[in-house]
Every structure is written in structure tokens, then in C-alpha cells.
Image (cartoon, rainbow, N blue to C red; front, side):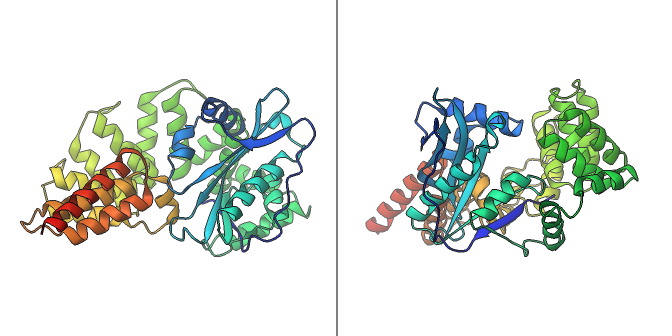
Length: 394
């Protein structure tokens, strides 16, 4: 199920800090990554790397990671300011808001979100956006209180979903009870919704129950979730054979993330025979659904003949699609966008057709710098300097 998008159309009237007694709002320090990761895991129930989520993320706003600590300097709330790379001068992104569940009811979620908003405003952005899930009602209330408005245009499901949220938050009916009733009657979408809901609540017994029922009806997302359960061995006893079976069924039903995961299994020979042909088959299926991760890999496969006949024109086609993702979320989240831009830059620099095109090479390396991130950013900068020297020599 896609995330809800909310937007604050202007940056006026953001509240000043009003931190409860005994707590402190401040920027994160360089040596505190582990504390951030521990709170993220406690709040959301899964592991996440600070570097992947923040400091090396595309669109990271400098001095944009805030924490609230208690009297013992324990992290009790975190939040990050990013920017929308499709409109970097206009829209900031409120990101990775998390509060220690042991400290609920103290308005820490409100205060950490407000702090991120103030940083977005001070960085010169004229509006802000965020994404959240349907059933995190306390967070949705905070965002509404801070001036965010629902985006009803993200896809055709949004008006009905926001109508349901409004009814729940105004106390008109018990939405969860209705979902359970429909799930008990065999509605696979409702069964999956409950599985996801209880997964987020870290009630894995209930999550497993509802996901299994939905998976029995070939619900692609439920199959994908269950494959992760049996592959990880943290919720249920690890069963690699069953995990691959579930993942394959999900992929066959068109689930793009399952197709990408299955491709990597065949690429690395993990619990399946290593096979470049099968790997590339699944990457192509996901690439055709607009996934930059897969599009870049398909381009790489055609460039090097991994599971397909080498075809540089096909490689360039898929790299170009990965380099200009249709969804800004992909631009912010996936390093493959940067890699694809560097690959195109190198392609035009070398001129594999015998005719180097330094203008196009320069274009793609500059676009790679717009994304930024680690070694890929350094490669783009180095190649731009080399192209500049070549142009000057000419």
C-alpha cells in the first residue's frame, strides 16, 4: 500500500520550541549514530543505518538531524530535514520522525517535527512535505496540527483513504473493527492491511496470522512480507526454501520488490542456483515497472552480457530511464540513480560508437553531482575536471 503524502503549502507560523522540562532539543553529534539507530529500531521494529538514512542520503540538508534527549542524554525523539530533488529550491522534506514509545504523551513528536520544519524554513524552502502510513493516527494528528494538508492527488485511492482517516479521528466509527470484520469474511486486502498494521505495532503473532491468510489468496504484498519473515528467521523459524517459494510467487504476481529480491538471489546464488539469465529476467520485469534499482541493473547486464546478449543501445536506454526516475521518491532513495548518471557520463566520454561526446558526458556527470553520495559523487567530480582539461586543451 502506497504511503500517504502530506504537504505544508507555506512556511509561515511554525511554532517556536517548547520542550518539556527535563528534555533537550539539539543537533545530533558525529559520535551518536548508534544511539540514533537504536531509537529507530525501537520505534519502528526494524534495523536502519544512520548513514544510509541521513548523512549520505540524496537531498540531505546540512545540520538537519535533530534529537531530543532526556536528563541522562538518552535519545527519545529523532527527526531529519531533507529536500525534494525535483524542486530543491522549493520543497523541504520532513523525514524519519521517531519517538521512543516509552515517552509517548509528552508532545515530543510535535516538538521534533516542528524543529525539522524550522530548519527547512531557515534553509530557504517555501513549503514542506512528508509521507506516512494510514493507521499512525497520533503522527497524522501532529502533522495536521502543524499545518500539513492531505495530498488527495497522489493516486486514485487517496480520497477514500483520507475519508476513512477523518472518520476514525473524529470518532464516527471503529475503522479497525470494520477491517477485522471484512478480513474475517475473507477480504485479502483487509487481511494484508491488518498484517501490515500489526507488523508496525510489533505484534508479530497477529501479523503472521493475517499475512498468512492473505498469502493463501495469492496477495502479492502479503507473500512478499511472509518471504521476509521466513528468510530472516526473526519472527518465525527460518525456512529458506519456503521463503524462496513465497518470493517467487509474489514476483510471478507482479510485485516489483519481490522481483528485485529474487533477481539478487539468482545473482548471488543465495538459496537458489546462481544464474545470470534468471537474474536478468527478473530485473527486466521490475525495470518495466519503473524501478530505478532494476533499470540500472538491466543496463549493466546489457553492457556486460550478463544473462543477455551484449547490446550497448539497450544498456543506454535502461540507464537513461534509471537516471531520470518518474517518482521523486526514487531519486532521493536509490544510489542507482547516481550510478546510472555516472554510467551514461562514462559512455559518452568514451564514445563507444567511436565518437566521444564530451557535452553529453558533462551533462550526465553534472546531474550525478546533483544527486551526490560517496564514491559516486567523487567519480563524477573527477571526470568533470578531466573533461574540462580536455576542452581547454582543444
